[in-house]
Image (cartoon, rainbow, N blue to C red; front, side, top):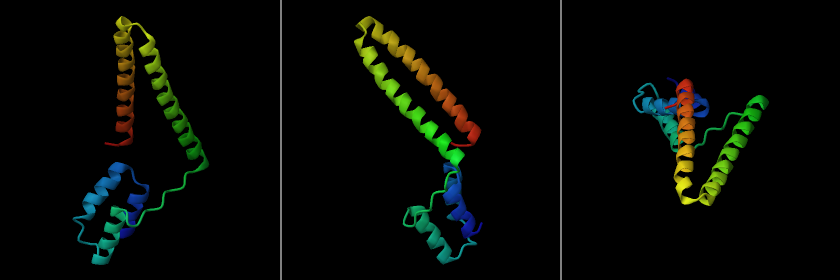
Length: 119
C-alpha cells in the first residue's frame, strides 16, 4: 500500500480500518524509511490527520445523534431520581425493568456495530 493510501485510511477509515492499516504498516516493506517515519508520526499523533468535512445532511444526522445521546443521558438521570423516590420494595423491580431496557438497547447497538463492520 502507498503512503497516500495509508493516510487516506487514517483520515477517513473506520476505527477497525485504521487499526488494520496501522498493523499492516508495521510490516509493509514497500514504504521508504522517510515514508515510514512520516506515517509513524501521523499514527502517534505528532501530525494530526485533518478530519473529513461532513456534508450538510451528515451534519444534520450527527446533530440528531448528539441530541438523542443527550436525551438518553438525561432520562437515565431522571430514572435514577424516580427509582430513589420509590419505596424500598419497589426499587429493585424498577432497577430490573431499567436493566432489561438498557440491555436490549445494548443488543441493538451491538447489532448496529456488526452491520457497519465495527469491532
